[in-house]
Length: 115
Image (cartoon, rainbow, N blue to C red; front, top):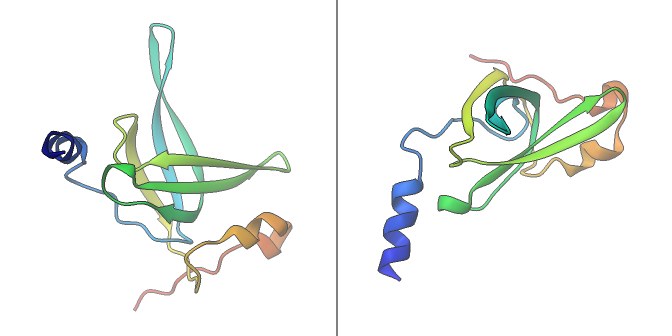
């Protein structure tokens, strides 16, 4: 069991991105296509965070050509190179699954005002 803990501890990123539920983020993901490698950006609203340690993940949702697209990213994955915060959101829930049922302006999250 200790061997598992040491392997898990070594694979955790030292610098975790500091974002919250409701934030609009741009995630840079490494994509391998055969021998080629490129970075793909995925921008959307963080609707959920779950897990802890190695198994920590976050879900990002965006609407692309009228279709809702959600991707789940592991926080500690080496393929997730960067998480950039575009804007901060003001929400009162830990899971924003209700945004799936909303369309247009109703699906927006209010922006948090900094003081």
